[in-house]
View (tube, helix red, strand yellow):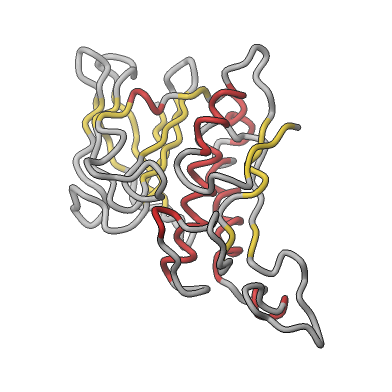
Length: 234
């Protein structure tokens, strides 16, 4: 297994993951050092932002790296990390690296089980997924930073066009998805990456050019006020 990571810990790491996935044969790759929850360090500031440890924003950054990394070709899995990576313990000052017993209570680690359930919701078929983010329009919301973790969308899809997994960051724009089977009706399954729950399925039909127009994000939003994942099946 190969790895990328340590820096950058934002959108830009996806390029390295995609590069290794596009090799022949594709390299099994993982983002080994993504955003670390609660870590106060210059390389751990998406778009210069440093949220309080274990805050909703801090945990969101970790979650965005989970799904964005896997759906950029990191199908080998994902690593979750916190600022307590060196196991700061009894008699040692916390400083920029909290005590391990504090970091073990960070909420971000709980999202890993939901990532597993999402990716393996169709069994081993996730192994057949191919990069397809370039088929998303609009993939990058206007004004979304290259060095941040807001506004981007990701998709991987099978060559048969019968199964796709998607992730939409906070502030993403409702997309049009190209490259599906013309005239076919698909089932859209929204997935909440915060609690691992599936939403009620929705049927959408591809037009004559194979484009799916998603009606809205959950809560009838055209611009996401939080992140969402989705599965599309034929």
